[in-house]
Image (cartoon, rainbow, N blue to C red):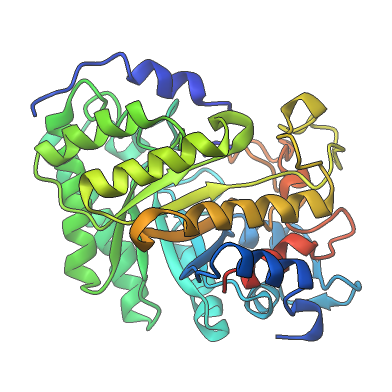
Length: 387
């Protein structure tokens, strides 16, 4: 996801294309969580994750994280205490600010390994945000032809994953691309060129398996309630012989429609393609206020989902609903979910634009920590509900 963009329009545009080819006391489970799990069949989810890509930059700009009662604590330890199973880390090729690259992913992976948290790597194949509206090639790859781009995808993927394995922190999950509605590495790999797109995907998948044989691979789209998009995209990809393990979905209720649509889509695609699915991104606000001068993405009551107020309790309730959504996929094919950028609290200098230190954060009211840096109830819910 690109933090400040509403992307549904880009995903919808792609649908017009024809098919090509054929823990501590504070972290204990609350009564509401326990009762909800029991009432929904008590199915456990193996993936209860948080994307923490912004953490190194946030910490370098002075961010601190606290327990619900205000005691300062290491944020990775807080995730472990809460019961989080996986942390998702995005990888850019040569970002302007030097974050979200191999040099920062490696030490963060060591912290996660010590805490017992699984590593989920999210390759964007760009120097910046990749999503349905933006799939810009890395600057160093700008003049490469399709053959050379395919090799670059393999080498970059193998370089990062190989380094993780060699330091004793192999990835358990890996995304080959991020929110791939319209492809990757535009224009060569956009939705008009499924032959090129799938060559790039196969290169990344091969690199992942060559370097980390036990890793599970994910292909990830946005617009998780749009079954037409998923059928169109995966029908094409499968027709080109792309072999992957898990279908990833972004599902934000304020952009991607009601829960019923997401549930129907997940039931259909897991049966249609014989693959399990994971909700790779979701989030919900704990307030509609903003801590900085940048107007947050979620800032109006009209954006909220009925029954889920913009309060700490409403955020936790949304996480229970998403966990139930994943648990209800027929045949146990819903592996779980991941909360997007749950540690991206506001700190000056740690904004969305890697080229502009003055850029702000429009996400801090969707984090899992409040404006006083205290862990919100949603963090406990994420880690322990259906755990």
